[in-house]
Image (cartoon, rainbow, N blue to C red; front, top):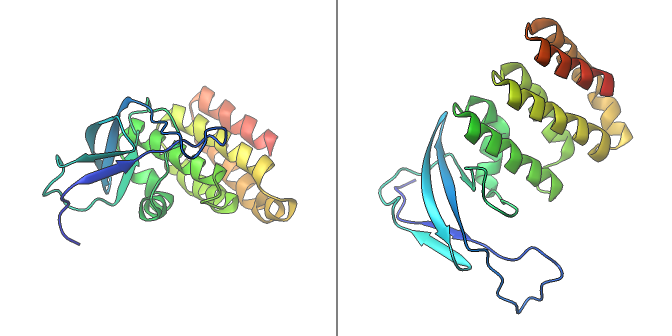
Length: 193
């Protein structure tokens, strides 16, 4: 894979009430993250039209993943391309920067909500990542996503299939962690499931 020439971001209205002929675009600034393993580089963009192209990335290597709106202030559904989604599902825990890691979790969660990632796979990813997560706020956020996906999006057969591992990971982390607030978060999640 060669070097990048441009970065192209497209946007469209996601509201069923907006007619297809209406040209609705949100004028907003956002950061697009290009991730390379555990590090990331931000590209600031200003979305004004249906398509925004930047040549500021010319010569950069192809990234492992791209997260539009990874600064956490963009408005709208952030859709990951399939290669980025797959890389993040396997490696979200290695991203060093907490804001980027949180943005990755939010984008992955949206991929569950929009049917691009199965809830069972998402639960498995959260269980793999939680023991490796060092940021307490991210732990609490991911535990909330785990609980919601477990109860709202898994059918009963899938819940039964995941229950032993969910309980094992939550119990192990509850015993392992020393911070009272993190202990409480794991306890609450364990009681919930």
